[in-house]
Image (tube, rainbow, N blue to C red; front, side):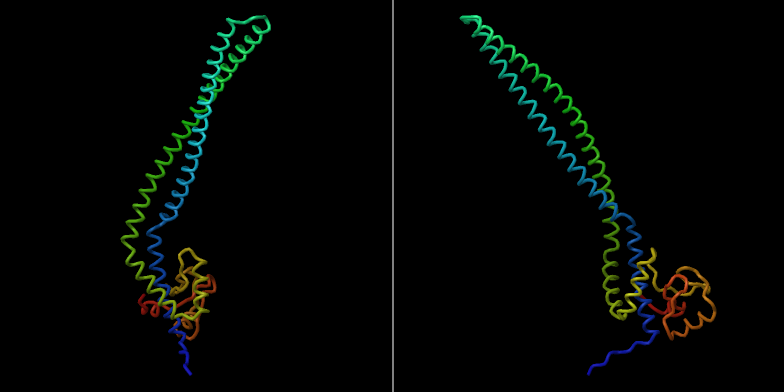
Length: 250
């Protein structure tokens, strides 16, 4: 039967220190990128929203233009009917025919005036929509220019760090495999709790390297013995002595 190797506390601590050091190097790369990935994503979302708005305004403009054309067509039709009725009025046979034709002429005149009013109102709306469209286009152009700049910065950083980041991710995957699941779960939980991502910290100037809370001499002595895993009573980070920490390469 195959036996599972039992690791000493010191070996476990070394494994955790190595994972921490590699993760910290990866964190440094993310800090170098800063807010750029989020800024790029936000700009892309804003541009998508602005393009949707631009398309909606363009559809509204097309609808107004179609409406104006329909009213122009209606005017042409009414004008043609006016010519027809005016010609018919020259050949009326009685008052009833005369009144009927005059009523049609009057109605077509009203239709023309109403269509002209509709065209006037629609042209005013068209001007407003056109102004909104220009504003949307300018906003898109500005955002796209900003996006291009941000992407350029991000691409430059990625190009400079891609090889190192790939190597570190490969290293950290291997390093994490050397840590038992229970410890790794605690390590990750602590990392998520702090912005600097430090789960394992050395004692510096007799204090916790994470929260700088003073560590009593007796506690420091226990930490140096590597007999058990000890956490800071103030912040919960795993504590190691400086010598052990310095002895581990990432």
